[in-house]
Length: 260
Image (tube, rainbow, N blue to C red; front, side):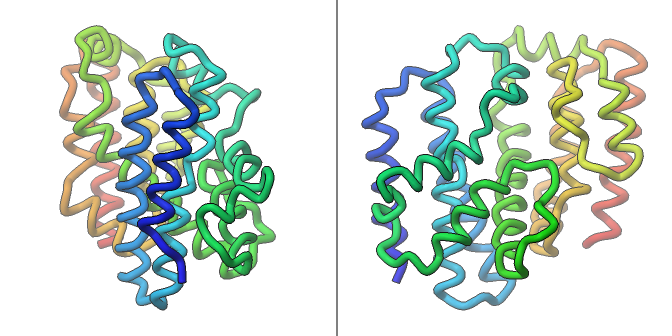
């Protein structure tokens, strides 16, 4: 049996022991706990077994453990584009390395029969595309964590991110990446590596609609209306950006209507 409460306490202990002095760290821990809950609810909606539901929740707890190492390496003033897109650090890969080192994963689950699924889901959760050679079971749990992660990131984009006046001003005065717009108009997840401004972060999050896998996730997106709330938060000053954002909102909401 997977002990979820023990796993949560172990992660909290791990973060505390790292003594991370970074403003993103507490917020990331809150994100992780919400993603774990979403993963559990999504697995329930898929009518998985109790053990599979607990496994999905455990993967939610572990999916971003590599982020805390990232916060130790990069200064708290590091530009967010650099932090999120640097090829020198991949928090999914780092998470697997942490769990494997000295068999640390045993702190979270006693049995080893799910290790491969856990490592695979943590490794794959932030990749632009899933590895095509995954087994059916690996792919299932990878898609669950990817959906859960995206749902909570969209929640954060509506309620948590970009609260400082300087951040709001930067978004409202920014232009959108033509490469990311091209991805979006082709019905694809916008490639984060092509970001040129904070405004592109909004486009990136909205483009998640093209990388969602399950009916539950689409229902949540429609119920919460994250797409419209996210875009409508800001008063875009450039006419081109304003018109592009309206078009993006219309396309994304049309896609959502098709899927629900």
